Image (cartoon, helix red, strand yellow):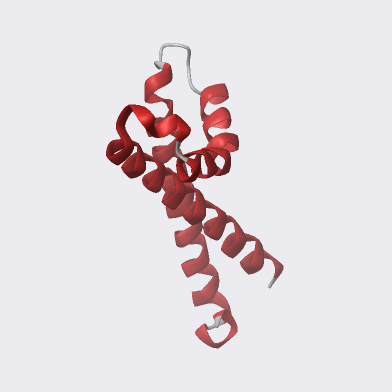
Length: 100
């Protein structure tokens, strides 16, 4: 049961980070050059900063800084997919009633 909680928590963190990255990207498109002074863009940037820094740390220096958010999004998508598959496997093993 502890593993189900850990997998569900990791999946939820990945979902929040993915939605924050998507929101930051969309708000960046809408705000244009003034995005750095936008309060909501700054909040989303603070929420995604640890994940972007981790992606920068594990990606090779060949990756340009402007592509690091995309690398972060792909990395988090991969983590989310792994967590989803793990959660499904655990739920099949313990029964669907235990997963609710």
